[in-house]
Length: 309
Ligand code: CP
Ligand code: NVA
Image 1 (cartoon, helix red, strand yellow):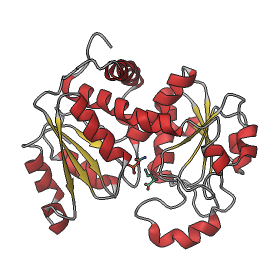
Image 2: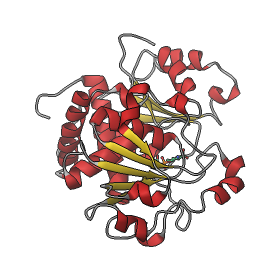
Image 3: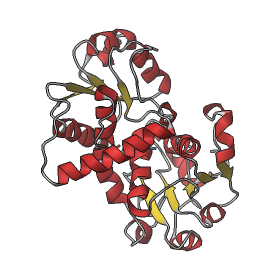
């Protein structure tokens, strides 16, 4: 990987100190936007957004976000570019990174984004891979800070699949100093190869979803079948049937607990409607905050720190 260029490929790519800056900067960028204050640190700069999987939130929040910072976004997908016709990732990275200033990629294997970044002259941001979704967990943590304050020392319950969101929460627990209770169904356990030895003190694998939720400050889940795993859908519907976040699970969490979901959600599968549409749910705030945390990340990667954060 290029030494000179800083990328955001997984949550552990930033330190706790960098996150403290990003959170403060997010608050300021959100305030400026809400106040109609123009702030264009990325004037004349272009973001390329490369999608190999579907998206609503990620595409919109990156495109609107770079525009709000004075820049411009170009949307590319594998269906109608040479990326889908076998051009090597390394060659695409060389070319695209000579034409734009920053690149966001949503793809399948993490190895693809790593190969791209290793050949990119400009920062690359992970907009979701099979293994990680750092921008989403960043928005989720910021949402908790916004509603409850400090996340260090708190407990987060993960109920459901061992997927890109769960592995990112594990990294976030270590970097930011909170604890994760994880409960996954039989046959869908965590893949140890994706977990660093240093992360192991920051999570507990629980026997039941109810046990995972006990005393938690955040209860969170995700779809039973992530993008790219559709062929397993029928088997997953059976294996995950007891992994629906319910009002009883929320009642077992801390009284002030919030429910989070990266969206899109399937009511009646991974979460009951009365939970996701209930008073403890902060899912719309999470989605909104994607916009502002990603502006802070883009600004930081391209311009570094501003003193007035
Ligand atoms: N949460 C999230 O990343 O949503 P999209 O798939 O719509 O981008
Ligand atoms: N785990 C889900 C997240 C979607 C935003 C997926 O990868 O499909």
